[in-house]
Length: 349
Image (cartoon, rainbow, N blue to C red; front, side, top):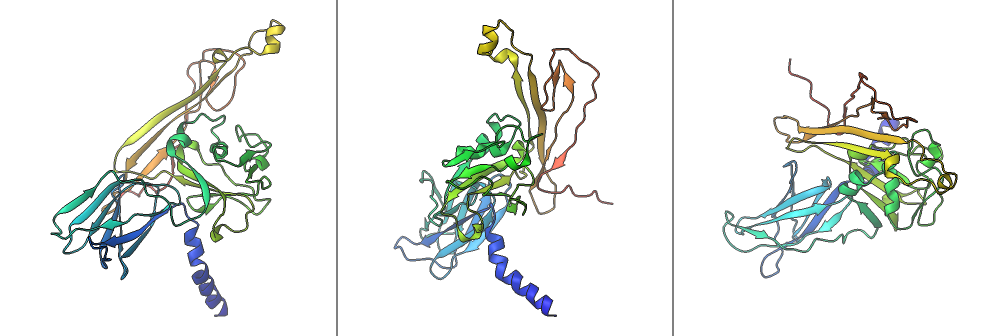
């Protein structure tokens, strides 16, 4: 009985801390009338533009609302209150762990009327004093990386210095180099990596247990200094990665990263010895698709990813190199899908 009571107490005590270690964003603000008097009981609806999922909140007696657990993305905010015109603001972009303040002023009128807010300045994070850099989706997915190691993009944040074995492909190298980055003057491997709020580090010398695939990342944030209390026990920074979620639309992409000796100049010493450029051909490619899941009430979706492994025209398509250019045919191709965020529902029986 004592163990049960102790377990319940620990859950209650650490519940706030567990929720705070998340990649999701939050919105807060105050709703007022034209006379700057606060409006209590107003409904604030935050709608994800990609999925259509609604998140709701109510203003309290001092006119303040708070909506949390918002995945990074673009949102539309609607404010409603009987006796006032509805207020709509679109294009609000939330990044990893944003805590933005968005205030609204409501005009007297019918609730069937609405006021659309446009041309507003992008809200700034006034709720957190943490210093960090957000690496957005386009950079995370499209910047060329040797070995497609998304951790290499951590160096885009100021005060991050890569150390030994941290750059390049993570395959076949010392795993101690995966997180070997100095952040704000700390020692290497003293930072934390989180994926969708889940820790990736293990107790043995704080090593990350995996490196996410580059195409699965929506965006991530590198927090370098003045960290909050929820990020204790780390002397370095915190890297918070979030994966892509489903949308209401079908979409997909095909990528190919190519390295070839035809694109490179010859080495200075090889030129001096009148030697040709060495043969080199390295290709990484694969498809990715995403489609909506047909749930009765949830318009979210799943995302599938896979890779094509084989040989074609002398290039090996699995991050390897070949010494000669030699066409090959009738090579088997393998494809292995994986689900990133939501499970595929079992067919009805």
